[in-house]
Image (tube, rainbow, N blue to C red; front, side, top):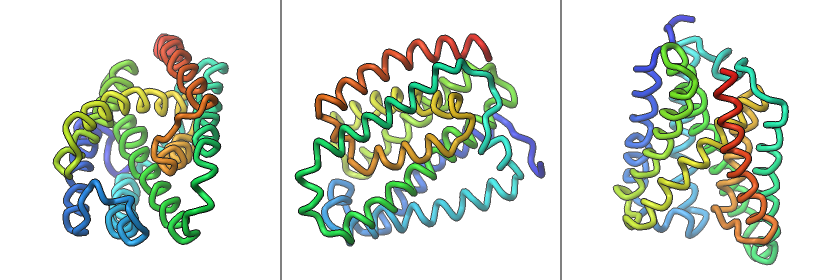
Length: 239
């Protein structure tokens, strides 16, 4: 490694990612409440900023020489934790079923741009919060603090949505939700042994805009939260 992992690098990267995205969003000229209105808005306000950030993040991780520990997780985890990414996948399928009637009414080009944009969101946010932050924090912190601080940083990222134009009540709910989702994605990394799985799940989860209101999705999400609580206890005890 060219640069030794440290908690400071992990924390700074996590803290700076949010204002960097908000700055690019403001530069795009699209108001936050309108970013999903049409293909042009998604392209300018999400895909282009996320593509720019992806290039920067790939460059940083390459320069530091962190790709090995970022991509692979060698911390022991109970085998049954693999049920967590399966449940998250089921929640995604449930959301698609719920929106099955809407999807055919959307232009294929809009769907394609949205999918690429949200996959970039998943790539970038996981690279920062379950990659760089986790590797940095593990250099000096016990694993329970690695989980806690990386998930808190991920939740704090979404507090910046208020600065981008989202109302405070919605932002507060989103911050609480994303702490839970961050914990789920942390366990997805631990259970699968790679960051690729949470990257893909995060991207596809975002692609349906959190509209998981079908019966299947609700059951999956409830089960996932219960299993996540038990999984955190089991995984952190073994770390």
